[in-house]
Length: 137
Image 1 (cartoon, rainbow, N blue to C red):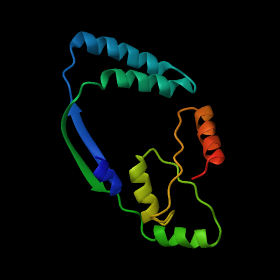
Image 2 (cartoon, rainbow, N blue to C red):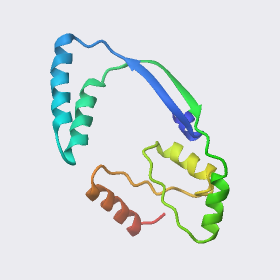
Image 3 (cartoon, helix red, strand yellow):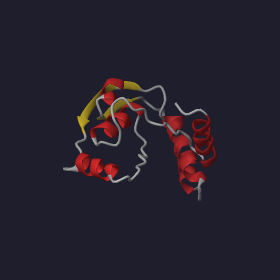
């Protein structure tokens, strides 16, 4: 999967496991309770519920496809950068995939490095940016 990501490909992984009815019923109740949570805690509750069932999976296979840029995106971004406009790339992609996409659409040069800002809370993101400001590469 790392090789696919470094080439900027989108991946689909298929895996499974057998789940006993009692385990499923217990998980389903947890999942429904998580979906009922309101506010900013909802997504975290759903993620925790999903992680509880998505474990010990048996890999069936993986595939990758090229996710092509729309026409003229690289040229447009190049011209905007030449005009002094700065860009931020926000993505949930793997680091390698994000780097490949950024290069292919002229957001960065191959020798440049992305600033990886990783965090699930505002405070974690702020701390990551502060560390980078203290010790830029």
